[in-house]
Image (cartoon, rainbow, N blue to C red; front, side, top):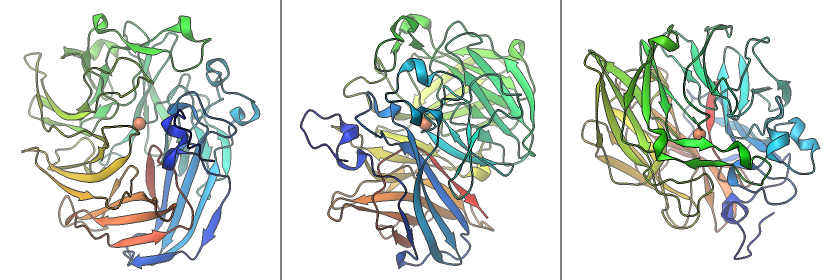
Length: 439
Ligand SMILES: [Fe+2]
């Protein structure tokens, strides 16, 4: 279903438009060679409105696109809707999508402790099988009492999954810690003044970092179409640093220049300082605004001893979907990866940058001939010899064929030539986030 009417919203045109359900292709043709050490599934989530245009790009029902890889072969590509209770409704409204369990489940899909969870931030997870069948809503055995962000963090050292959830009613922010075995072992309400949209957070070796930024929910507009969230600078903007096992009273808050941040790249400690990297937006006035400002990579340096924070831009390019090696989440990192956005019209991804975080300089794998990308994830090599010894993996759409490929890049080299292109014989719409789930 592609609407090429000039007034159609961008998410119903080109490669943003939804696709039909339940395609499966097998024994996929490959250009190049899939590294034999990659054995697992690449699963990626995104909105795929069913019947008619959703009122916002963020509000289509979640569809997972997956590719299974083993021994240098691509065994299958398939797409499946997350079977959420919302599929039974004629229309998605703020009322029905905010009922507990009725998740759009369209934002991310994450594996932890043998569970695969489809996530959307105003909801609880929906558990999936590795073959993309829906198991059902998942609340950690009744211990998850509020919502779960779509951006949990898995600590590479402890194996814990740390996350938060925000509520549009109190409690507005809650922190959760899940053991390496998947047991939810800590829940802490974090005191903040109001319901803000908190899309992501960050961790370090000893701390978690919350963003309390001035994108506020307006509950008086819940009955209207769209997402009632807008910017109010008078709320202020703060970063909160809390020990991982701490409570709300242990949070140290730091005032920063007002801005909005969707996604964090990484954070880490250097002595008594916390370094935080993320693409930052200035002038983002509401969710759904026309021509939103592009995010630019930024660094905050938080001094836990003297309570100060300094901040500085790292680069001028419009980038998002920031990433670091999963082996270095919360740890010092030399490299970061992010996708470059088209700054006019639809937010197409034009290429992938590998940053040197000291200098802000980057090398780019630029997509050519009108090809557009999706989030690129970093997968470390099995026995990495350096931080960037690994692969970037992403779906790339070819408009001349109207088909997509799963593309694997050598992250060390970032050359123009992918090491493998897996031809899916299907179109994968531009979507949101995904994960590599190793066998
Ligand atoms: Fe996100």
